[in-house]
Length: 502
Image (tube, rainbow, N blue to C red; front, side):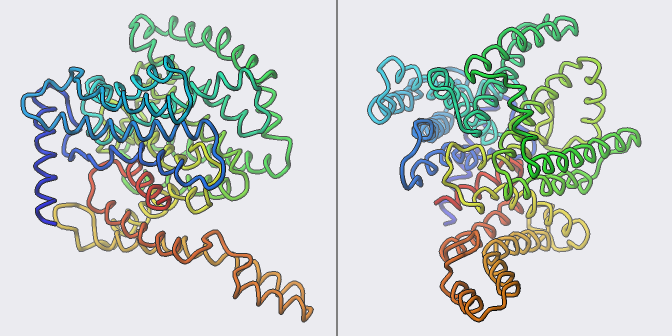
């Protein structure tokens, strides 16, 4: 084991030296996080492998893309570990994932030759060379693993959008989730287009040109495109979707209160002009718990749409902050300086990572996920990480060697996650006890007791193997939280998702 660890550290050190020698600025005071780089692609592969019955075309293509991304990661890291490599150049070895992915698109997904080659080259090039370009464009913002995970997430999104939108043009979506997917894909593509245009054309940093471009792109391309694909007014559909049901309207109102509370907290911190503490930042994790748990249980479709809208909004606000576009640019930048995390640099990514970590399982192109898997982000960064921070700051006295994290915080992280897992396991029994007390006939009592012992109506964790795996995953995540210097909001949910899906 010690030999493997020593070899990994030597492998990691060679990569970091090559990256530094080529002028790529790695996030300071952090390891490379190579293990994180494979998780996005691995998540996509496991998702398609766990589909028990039929799977959608998008799910198959995302799974193939995930395999290509895992192979891209291996090729990228292997090439970067070699001596004297020009890191920013496109190397021949990067054609390997492109060729393999193209063959899978052609043979497994029955795509045409031109389409398969185009998609394969896109996955192979962006999954390798694109990672280094991302680190070059935003110095000191990413570790190698974080940049790989972010770029691979973008590739998965682009591949799903390129697959889904032409399909929906010919077959307009009927189900709510399908319509929400089209809305989110077009909306996020719109925001990404704005970001790319601002990056390539500095004249758009001017306030007048910026707003002219964004409004024109929205009114003349984005909204008409949505109307054509959906064959209905997208704005009216969203309003109807949110308020056509009393329970859904109540959830929207509840979320609006949570949003106002978070804005109020930020404004109070800005007015006080004091640096936000770690505990203050974790208060947003608690708010996220209050938003996501009711949404996951009562209306995942609404949460799916809302989380995607918030992602687009966060990216848009970060663009405005970075370019200092009035009237929000200065206010956002002032808030950034007060809430900045030690892992943030040029970009404010902590909030975006938090949202993505909580929503990652919800965004995967499958409807075959259990509630526990959907809770992978809530468990890790909403409950576990928050508990570790709270207990560690107040009662932590024994630190892990080489870190500022405490053993007490890690124990709290494990304990709170296991408590939630057990609660999800036995909630079926609680339902039976309610039935047992509400109906007092002898037949009903006997039926309720039989159901409890035979697990006819189990909780959300319906097998002993899944329960054991969940607890072991919670322990593993807690140990990673204690030892890693990667961004918790990004790394922990991905790792938990993979553990629960294996």
